[in-house]
Image 1 (cartoon, helix red, strand yellow):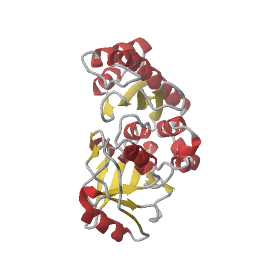
Image 2: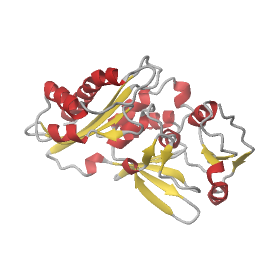
Image 3: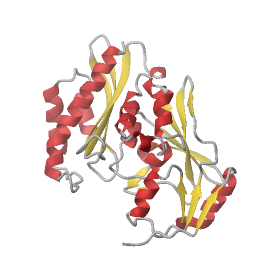
Image 4: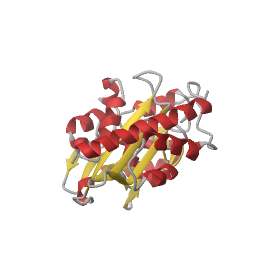
Length: 300
């Protein structure tokens, strides 16, 4: 196994200094925040080329700003701080609250950061799936400029994102669902995961965001994000199309998932084969859709 032997650790309270260092190091440099994901990558020999570790923990990026239009989350905000902020209890953002509570033990939540959970880009983590369903965007900075990228455009493959050399994620932005919905409908979201134990990584996870038309109780729009079945989180667009403009029925949800993924090879692991995940997936999606749907009616 390749050995991880870094040569330099850089920390600063000046953003431009860290960005310049990142740019000069290229693939030899790597951002660190809470370090939980970084530790796993290093321990497993996945980043032997990294010689310079650049910490962004001195940049005062630990915050949750709840405005009328959106929730803005600093990249070094810990998972526990986000959970305790109550911002993710806003109607429509409940999936994020659900996902944070599934990340155990609390010692991990106290150290792991929101930016780290996003940027590690592995299929076994939970928060990115929930953030995808909630239409998250990322504010990305470099020496020269700043850009905003939707999270559903961010991932390329496991361990590979659209971050360029010399860039890092500075902020995560969540739009407020109630500001884009009319009075005739309500939004709600939910997240579910399945793992071997309550403390384990997921075999499959699912996040759902939907809007319910109050007079007919039909699903107007729905967004279903899935993790653990491919190398990056993905949308279940075929299932979404089959559930829109109708009331959810459990059998219809099960059949829709089975039909949509019948010819798809799901990402196997030592704890869950392709066949096993095919059995689990319809149940997880059904339960998550119904959880979000029930919340939308309660939000009325």
